[in-house]
Amino acid sequence: MHELGIVFYIIKDVKKAAEEHGVSHVSAVVMDIGEVSTVVPHYLQDCWRWAADKEEMLTGCELRVNTIPAVTRCDDCHREYETVRYGKTCPYCQGGNTWLLRGNEVEIKEIIV
Image (cartoon, rainbow, N blue to C red):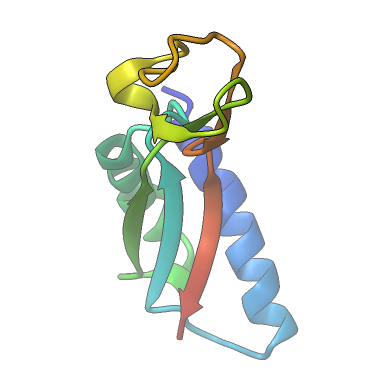
């Protein structure tokens, strides 16, 4: 479970941003997590609850997760399609010259004070 390690990085970044802006308590953190990022949102939230409550600035802080759908682009026919549903083979032209356009994100979108 690498989610705990990710939580430690999120906490470090949130604390740094809060301190730079003179914020003493954060009420929520909003994350964008890509559908194929390998991060399991409910594991991330379980780890968050355990780790955040150990930090005075983050006690009771909620972690909200937006799931970003995975989309792949085909360079042969120049179309986009659902990655999870079709994988690496383009459903339009059956080409394999494809690449992940989005859906691998693990980003802090918003810090709510």
